[in-house]
Length: 164
Image 1 (tube, rainbow, N blue to C red):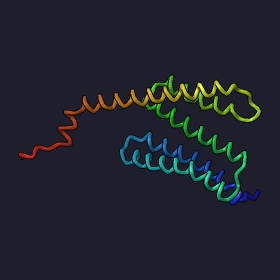
Image 2: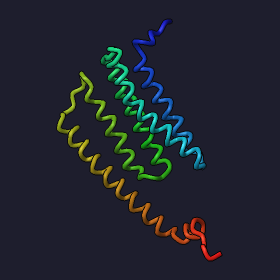
Image 3: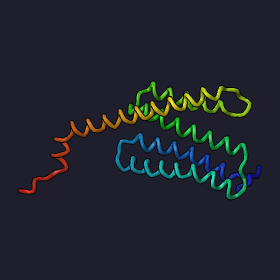
Image 4: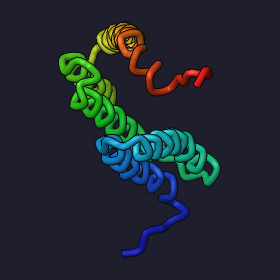
């Protein structure tokens, strides 16, 4: 079986994104700062690849419906894996995670041949946007409280007495 690399390069970039997201999750699961920094860098590169696949397809004039579908599917896989991982690490409530996963798959129902009322999808997207803003704000408040509660530990370990 022969695969035309020129014709399928953008689709291969999508598949590479999916493989990289599993590597990101693996690195994030290791309780080591160096691994987590590597995971962050790999995640940023993976996000950059989301731009690259579309650019490659347009540049090589190999855009197709299946390519667009694979790109959207790759986006949903990446988003949902990250969201479920964040819930698994207890950084977000599981109920909100389930809602995000459900909404992402509802959005797939916009595919041709599947009839879903468009206003339902618009309402669901808006609702999830506001829920995500609330979750981010809540987690930011939790982070500030954690820093405030940890101030004595931070002071002992990171500040030194210049009189010594």
